[in-house]
Length: 458
Image (tube, rainbow, N blue to C red; front, side):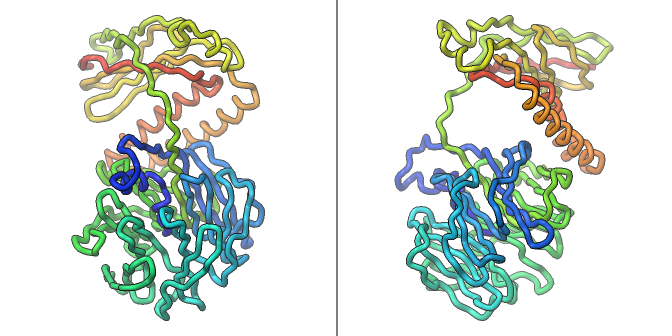
């Protein structure tokens, strides 16, 4: 897949030594999906990084094959093989431009530091081209008769390499950005079908998906040290992409099951981020949006919750410090005016068992009693200043969260591995907590406590 050095976390991770300060950081905040719908029509779908708040961008006549988000300029690029254009728009889908007219556009990648866009064309053209980001100065980079179908691309701007798949030869190749010095770095079995490549530049790795065996592999950027990353993923891994800063974590589409998957390489937790119930028709590619907006640090609640365990009943009572609005907005009435109505206070507590299982409760009271299973636990909490939502926004938020809860329950019932069940159970706790808060919205400020000392429930 087109990969996506343009996730500007890659800029922060890779180009730090060149020009960016070490304090630069970008958070993954959005996922953009190229989705094919029936009758030759398509759409570009946006979701939050946790798979919620799914919406379709207002782009007419979009039939995206591959997509990439430029997090720095806040622009989207995609290939449209039906109209024969590479197109671009603003991050919200406005100001659509037919950037480059070509025959059969497929893969797309951006070399941000040099201001270049690369794309592959097939089946009849069979070449990789590049141009300036404004569409000017089109030139051929690699031309070969080996391309039997669309070719997936990835760029390492730091080392000056382009990586691409030759499907007919069952290989992954690497060349200089000008097309010189082509070399084969990875050979796969003739029965395997490479469905996408992505680069982890922070750890100098390349990843690729295999449709035949439903597996994902990795290797060093020169093709050495090939390893199986995960198998039996029960999905067709199209549009592979990576978030280097979290695990790292791999994301991919399954166009057959109409799902978006996520796999943390550090914890080996694999979950379905967006299920078929979300209404995707045939996702083929995705790109990640990283927001480098500087956010004020969350302040710390000065106390931890007190804990009283009820012997023999597997429950605990948590007591929180009493806050008033002056705690959130000290000597600053203007801060309260930032929200539509005078806020009220809520307490959001999360208990965590030693094996990672969580239990979450949200209350307007300074005390909460919760059922806990046997084990060793700790608890922390947040104080939130919240205001009421408008009725229409309440309804929309609750409907989306009802769907989210239902899809997680469905995935939980199908899960067989204990680690995945824990992951889904925690996701369910979070979704239910958000549903309880759906009638409110948080004000600007929240406060989080440290964790309590551990306590035993028997």
